[in-house]
View 1 (cartoon, protein in one colour):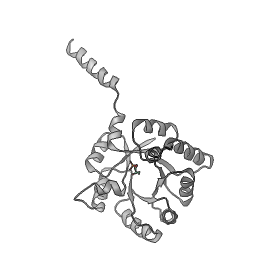
View 2 (spheres, rainbow, N blue to C red):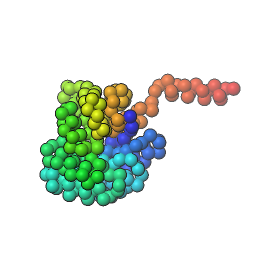
View 3 (cartoon, helix red, strand yellow):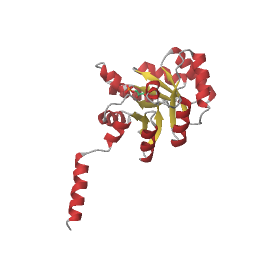
View 4 (cartoon, rainbow, N blue to C red):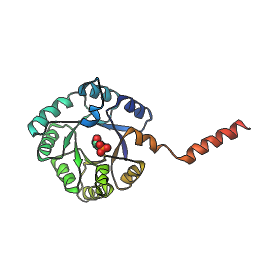
Length: 213
Ligand code: E4P
């Protein structure tokens, strides 16, 4: 499973990139809205100059024709832009067109396996099931990863599964075990993945022993 970072914050992206584990970036309108004093296009230029893997940029139009126009403009920013499209009938019409144009897509706001299957059949490069938001309403987000993974395997579908709306490190481990190809992770959770109290204690003891030699 690969790691993407789920943020539009440039400092977080630079730091994650410097760790050597980053394969891509996902943004969404809420994340972009937190970034002040920079346009979406400017921020996408910055991000794509740092990260060579997929950088998801979400369209805000709701009609297929407008999504297509908007996505084509965003795709001109850099070759590694992936157009993020919501899981709606219009969204999938746009995905079909993008796939014909050779533009990569990420179908977002996936909350059940049928939505993932539809998105894949429309030609989506990635589907993004939202784990945390399902957990928030008392469902089991991780079971959805297992279902999509099984369905894609049975039917030989090569659309990649991005485990999204990740809230904690256990989501990451479980998403990997259940067959997600990618987890897109907030910066805070990415840094939590590094931590174990025994690692910290071990370093402390090694250093103390070294200094007492
Ligand atoms: C995915 O690409 C989304 O940007 C994201 O994971 C949504 O997460 P949230 O539920 O924490 O907003």
